Image 1 (tube, protein in one colour):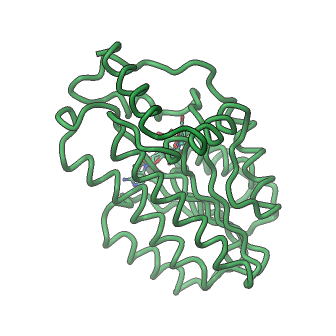
Image 2 (cartoon, rainbow, N blue to C red; image 1 turned 180 degrees about the horizontal axis):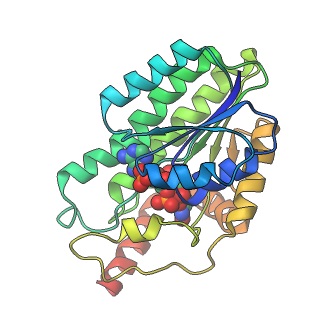
Image 3 (tube, rainbow, N blue to C red; image 1 turned 90 degrees about the vertical axis):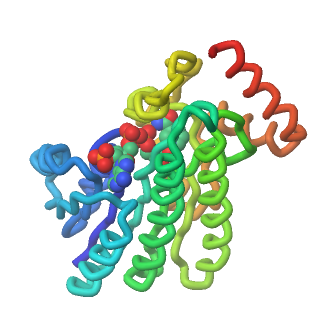
Amino acid sequence: MLIAIITGASSGLGREYVHALDREGLDEIWVIARRKERLQELAEKTITPLRILACDLTEPAVLHAISAELEKNHPIVNYLINAAGFGKIGSFADIPTEELCAMIDLNCRAAVALTQMSIPYMPPTGGILNLCSCAAFQPIPFLNVYAASKAFLLHYTRALHAELLPKGIHVTALCPYWIESTEFISHAKDTKNSSYIEKFPFPQDIALVIRRSLEGLEKNAEVVTPGIIPFLHRALAGLLPHSIMMRASARFHAMKS
Ligand SMILES: NC(=O)c1ccc[n+]([C@@H]2O[C@H](COP(=O)([O-])OP(=O)(O)OC[C@H]3O[C@@H](n4cnc5c(N)ncnc54)[C@H](OP(=O)(O)O)[C@@H]3O)[C@@H](O)[C@H]2O)c1
């Protein structure tokens, strides 16, 4: 049984990856997110049968259950797309500690666990796509845990890319800038002091992000910056002292709050 595993499939990028892989001739796509009804609606729109794993990836027992599902079915995992993730914008005082820790559990822990458990089932042509972010390129005040979690995921993915080269398994970190047609911002600004951020300028087109990232995975790119803004962001973060970029984002926050 040839499958793809896609987390965060109930909305935004994850859902678009399901559509993008729908005509790949897979036997099943395993879709993971908490909102079961969204996944069921998605299953009505795809040709490929979806295996719905409605669960909260921050719960360790859930990760064991997915591992058991893999052991039971012994599929060939041709794609793993770790798209589930969330961020919270605000000062350390605005965001409850449990939410900060949940961000680490989902953005880092779950992505690592799913990757580890999938690798033994991947063929040499298989691919792992980890959804990082431009936020990964430098520390960001008032987006501190999110940016740090994405920096972790970016470094982890780049290192794994090198480790899996001899096996032929492709591993790519995707670092997009802001994509409007997702639920990301509505969750991000849902904090005690949320008035200062509604949107960012020059949002990215979701279709372009999906296309460029799958092309990058196909070519086994280590990092994909899909578009001019993420490309320049990465270049600037490599050139400028991070203190300058951090000061700029702290000023932006001060203006808005
Ligand atoms: N949109 C952007 O501007 C942007 C930019 C750079 C990077 N990214 C990254 O891209 C990835 C996809 O985000 P998106 O923009 O598509 O946002 P989104 O529309 O909010 O989608 C997030 C997905 O994650 C799932 N999810 C959240 N918490 C979960 C949990 N505890 N257990 C299981 N699933 C969970 C959500 O499903 P349920 O709520 O149904 O569980 C949803 O399907 C994220 O990792 C994000 O950090 C986004």
